[in-house]
Length: 128
Image (cartoon, one colour):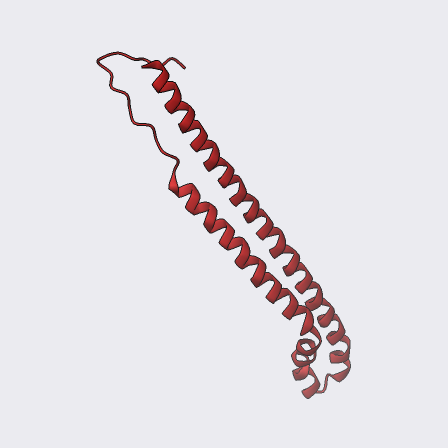
């Protein structure tokens, strides 16, 4: 790309690396940490309380005289809640890994932007 240096054209100031990418990188890191913590809490609480929740959810059936149906539904509901807890945990860990990787990529983009600005500043000083 040719650089025009004439007396009529004044050199334009070089843009500095943007602060918004740095802030966005930090936001992605914080979100990744929060999603990991909340996913761990939600997944572990779903897995650990699956048996009690299933028994309490089928309590109205037992009161109304559907004890046989309640005994059939409770193990399936407990298994469903355990599997749901595992799915929530895995999903949150994957989402936080993606957010962390996005933050790392933004960090690399910021470094490349700073290096490019430094190289352009060197080329402008050589052409004067």
